[in-house]
Structure formats: C-alpha cells, structure tokens
Length: 630
Ligand code: GAL
Image (cartoon, rainbow, N blue to C red; front, top):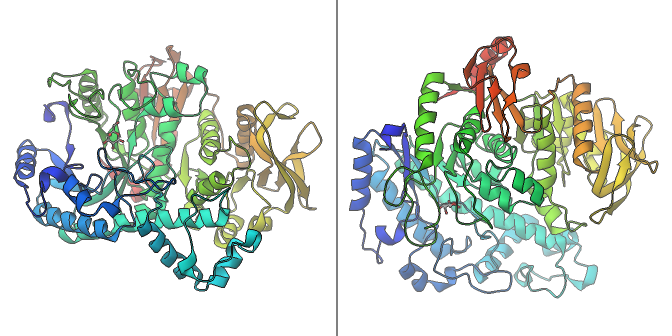
C-alpha cells in the first residue's frame, strides 16, 4: 500500500526501547530486522529512529536519579515520554550503548538510508532540568566559561543583592528563588542547557556515523520552539527535519479567535513556510518535513479536520521551499494509548483515510512536474537568533513580548509582499550576498556580525533593540529610553500604522534622519543611507507599509497579494497557494506562462506551479551550486 501511493521512506523504531531490550541486556532485534526486510523487499527505504526519547521502566528504576526535575524540584516521572535529564551521565552512557548496538546491527543495511536521533528534543518542556546532575554539570560549565569566580561575579553583577559566590561549587541553579533570579544567571543556565542538548545529540551522531558512514543523520525539530540552539545542534546533522502540524500549531498560537476561526482548517498561511525557510538554513540547504499532519490530531485545545486539499497544499508548500522529503505522521491510527484520537493515512482498521488519497495524488503530480527542487538563495534575509529568544523571555519588560511572534510578524509582512525569504542566524556567512537584511530585536550582536553588516552593502532594517551597542557603527543613534505598553495602548505614526507593546526614544547622530515620525513627535524609523532603525514593535499596518518602503529602497519589487494568496519563487519555479475559502483569479501573478499544475481560477487550498521565463538565467546559476534532486 505504501509503495502504491508513491511513498519512498518509512520511519520506524523511534520509541521502541522496551521492545528492543525488554529487560537489561536481553536484546530482541529480530522483529526490527523483519520489518526492515519487509520494507526493503517492497522497495522502500527506512529512516531508523534511536529509541532514546523513551527509556524503559527497568532502566528508570535502575537509576531513578536520571529523571529531570522541574522548576519546583519535582521529578518528571515514567509513564509518557522524554523522562530523562540531558545532564545525567549514566543515562547518556545507556543511550550510547543502545545506539551502538543498533548502529552495529543495522548501520550497514542498504535499506537503512537515514537515522533519526531521539525524537523532538525538548518537547513537553524538557530542556531545562533542575536536577543534581544538572547542578554539577552547570558548575563545571560556568568554570570552563569564566575560569575564575570573580569573573563570573563581575559578569553576572552578583554584587547586586549580595549574590557573590566564593567558588564554582557554591553556584546554585536559578529556580526556587524568593523573587526573580538574576537574568545573567538565567541566561547562562539557558545557554548551558542548550549546550547539553547539543552534546547529547552529538554522542549519538558520532556513533551512527562510525557504523553508517553513508547514511543521512537527521533530527525532527518542532515548530515555534526555541528552547535550545537549533543551528548549533544541526552542525552534527546532515539534514534538519521538522514536524509540521498546521492546525495544532494554529490552535496553540497567540492569534485571536477571529484568525483561528478563519484558518482553522488550513492553518496559518505563513507559519509552515517560516519554518521551512528556517530549517533550510539550519540544515545548510538540506531539510525536510518528518511529520506532516494528515488529519485531526489529539493534542491541541481543539482538533479540527483539515479542509479538503489542505494536506496537498501543505505538502507543496514544503516541496516549493526545497524539502527533500515530506513524510506523514502516521501511517496507521493506533487504537490504543495516548494518541488513539490522532488520525493517520490509514484508519485503525487499515482502510484508507482521506490523506491517503491526497498522498496518491501528490505523488502523481510530482512525477508529472519532474520537479528539480531548488534551494535558491533568497535576496532577503531575516535574522532569527536563539539567544535573543531566551533574552526576551528571561527579561521581557512587557508581559506579551514574544521574540518568536515579533520575527514571525516580519516574516508574514514579507510574504504578504510576495517576497521569498531565508530565515538565518546572525553570522557573516548567512547574510553575505543579500539585498535586504532584517534584524529584529537582536539581543547581543557580535562584533563580527556588526562588521559583516557594515560591509554587506545591503539595505538593512534594525528593528527595536536596546541601545545599539556594536551596531552603532552602522547607524549613529542612541536609545535614550524604552517603554513597554499595555494591551490597547498604541503610538500612532501619521498614515503608517502604529507601535504596540514596545517603543524606544532615539537620539540621532548627524548622519541620521527620521524617515517616519510618530504623532507625538519622536523618530519612529531612523535612516542613515541604506540602514534603517525601527524604534518599536510595529502593528501589522506599519509592518506592511514599512517593509514595502524598505524593499523599494533596496530595489526589490514587491507584489500586491490578496490576503489569502501566497507566492514562492524558487529558482525558475513560481508556486502560488490559496489559503482562502474562495476561488481567486491569479492571472496577474501568472502572466503569459503555462501552468504545470493548477488553474488560473485557483480553488480553495489550490496550488499552481509554473516555470518563469524571466528567471531562466538566474536559476541556472543557482542550481549549479545548490540543487537537490528528488
Ligand atoms: C510529535 C511526535 C510524534 C507524535 C506526534 C503527534 O510531537 O514526534 O511522536 O507524538 O507529535 O502529533
């Protein structure tokens, strides 16, 4: 059946520890061999998951101190999944043992094309652990970073409230304090915790690489999740994969009810694309969707069914952004345990469910397209930085400040203007050769990054940040004061929109002029040649106006899209998507070209694809470096 609908990869084994090793040292790999052989005989390739997200009961009982402790000091117990602490050395060694055995057994199997390490690191709030193991490891981490305790005291500002330590062994974890812990302490604990996840993953990746040097190593990341540095972890992977649940994510998002109702069956038109563009950067061009929602899920506050055609729409969005593979979670609905209400390609009785037919159609269309999936470098780069997300979470200054939502707002406005974007880290390499670079709320830019911006020649937009520090070298301003604004408060800019949540008061140097001004007479958007500084949190209207203005200055042409239409240009291909409930005439976006897929009157959830003639030359240059073939 899998083969019949055009699937080529099957992921298995990612939670199977209790069946691979039912009790300590008693291994049962035969069933897994049989499964791999069966898939191989059918001409399917296997993605084999390491089972370390679900340590079995005997192991947890053997070393109960491997549990993570939550911020209240309570152990996170056996009975679901992800019940381990990243800092527990005993558990890390158990993981090495089982991964080594699996890699030895299956690393050389020709059908095992890829390995997935663990499953969704950090899911269910599992990155931060306040266990004794974490405390010991954190002390050593601080020692390696600061060398002397005086340096740490100075860096954290521990003189404030008499928080000085006399040695690294006195350092505490930043939980259960009477009032807020020191933000620098929290920030270093967050950095440390992120490093622990990266190190945990690296140990597995190294073992797999030894036994399966030709296999692809990947991990399935999540959406809207910033608890560890995904760029750093991806350095040990070949492919960055992510799990895309458009309807579940929308229900869990901070959007208002009107938005949620409007898109309840197709999902936020920009959320998936944002992650595609981000994970492409994580995987240095190589990325995929590991779990695509195929029907109602079980874990959001409400779990509606996708609109007819939505699974196909989501799948094409991913391929249009250069996904190597789109894989669906899951094959068959399990009529037991936590996810029994989670739909799949097959019903529990193995009869085809709706998405099964969608997948069959997608496979036929992909074959028809003969698609070479390109990952052309976008002219526009949007910087997305994990440290910034942590900083704004640790000290938000306004209760509703979310770095993720802010960056997502910029992304949405860029997509509304028809622009294709790369969502990248704040590094020189990531911003090289761009025409427009947007850097929202970057917490602590490095000197190297500031230097790279100064040298880039691109048009740059630096939205609200604390006094610009090293960035002052590219625009001569000072931030005199910042304020956060309660819901309902707006600082209006004549004719351009408004600031919400956050605004800054600027002092401008001689080379800088106000480009937009607020009605109370302050500079809202400052400009020094092709560098812009935005002094607040823009509402949607301001974002749309300002980004079009800045794109215009950069010499980038924008499109006027209706609210539910989205466009992606990737090399020579243009993809058009309809997230709305009504058919829409897209002729203006198509021109004279012939559509390979879709109609000019694009139906709800419709996808249209064509080859842009004006783009042949540029595409040829791009594909020679980056193309991946599917
Ligand atoms: C993901 C996870 C899967 C499954 C799925 C349900 O978080 O990787 O194992 O739980 O969600 O939607």
